Image (cartoon, rainbow, N blue to C red; front, side, top):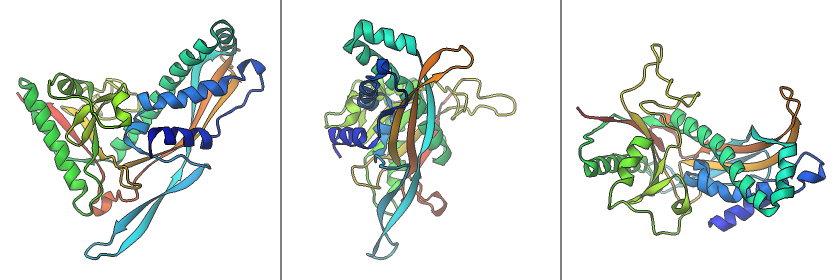
Length: 319
């Protein structure tokens, strides 16, 4: 589905609403609408997943699968249940009203960008955590950092091996994504032959899109988790005596297809809702955004049957 069609469907189905009845924030729907537009720049969930907007709080994802050793096909499904994230925008009602009165449309654009960044950060944390929990761990890749071209070629080759393995039992797609830590993403950014994709892709204008190499889109992990896998705290204190750090940075690989069910991840936005809530700590009325969505793996992702569609491996420096 083309980006404009997806955006239109999201805006139609996401039940954009506002819980407050204050006339001064009646333009909140404009802000939320702008937030959805900007999601494609900041949110990994939109960039690497099949986007399937929901009409209700739950739904199902479907995929076609061929039975092993036969030409018979069956339809498999996976249920999608939404979860809700309460996001403190940092705006008090007074600040919100003053911005609208002073800047009018410019306030909508500026605040919309800020809201999209706040909301996307929450989604990105959730996506990295989800991939890390569901990905099959592959052997560590050791690279020599003295040769940038060698770094990119070795990482790309290992990513390609994972993509081929994901298609070994049944073909899904050779188009894929790879999420790299800042350290290793910089190696790709510094390679002269590594350029942004010319194809009509949502990725090419993203702030997290590093570039396309072969049939793989590379993205920057927005969290600086040097020498660590996912951490609930998202900081560099993840490693300690009880939970030692691994010796390299993880990268994450999955499939990204235009065919329904063949992408590794399915992102299902449902509702964005604004609400003015009294903060008991300060006594101020503050604006909160409630983001409800579902995130699941493809029905074809069956790791316990040797059919994993998500891989991760550590990249570490050789002596």
